[in-house]
Amino acid sequence: MSQLSCRNLSIGYDGKTIVSGIDFSVEHGDYLCIIGENGSGKTTLMKTILGLNPQLEGEITFGDRFDKSKIGYLPQQTHIQKDFPASVFEIVLSGCLTGLKKRLFYSKSDKQKALNALEKLQITELKNKSYRELSGGQQQRVLLARAICAANEMLLLDEPVAALDPKATMEFYKLLSELNKCEKITVVMISHNIDSAIKYASHILHIGSKQLFFGDVKSYIKSDAEECFCPKCREGK
Image (cartoon, rainbow, N blue to C red; front, top):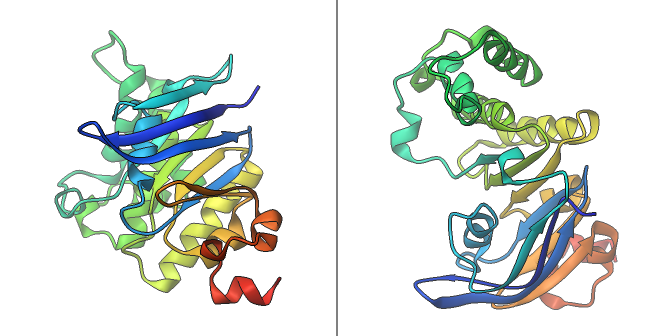
């Protein structure tokens, strides 16, 4: 059974539908990029999957051995968050908050999980640094480490490279690809860059006022839908 499935899903807010007829599924180890124009409902879809927005129609189901508590979420970062006065370790460790339940303090295993996440993201040396003093690329690695602490089976990321320079963007994409391939973490990411989606993803979901495409990258490149192509993709047809 799929880790995540959406069937005939309609999404929106305040009772107003943005996109309807959304049908896709995510298997363990997939790397799905959600693409579309600004305002096409990408963030609304992700928030609906997480239960932060109500679904208007259709259904969202998770696999028998999978639920929303196993999802790590990396939303778009705000200016206030970028200036958060805490250490890197404190922020990464806070990803374990959902697992505290009735416990008042972090356990030794929680702290080890945070250290392991720092090592995976290659930022152990930043452990005691103030988050607000880091570069944009370093901050995104910290937030990704936090998301991994929250859950290490599926990551949902909302345009995580939007404010990064080209070098930091490339490093982040490579790191995310390694987590997907080596750690077998399922990735569902909103992206505004079709070129990067084609390069790194295994599957593409393209939405507008309706669903324009869902399938693997090779099928996307061969698709006849005009909306689904950037000039570079057309050259590979």
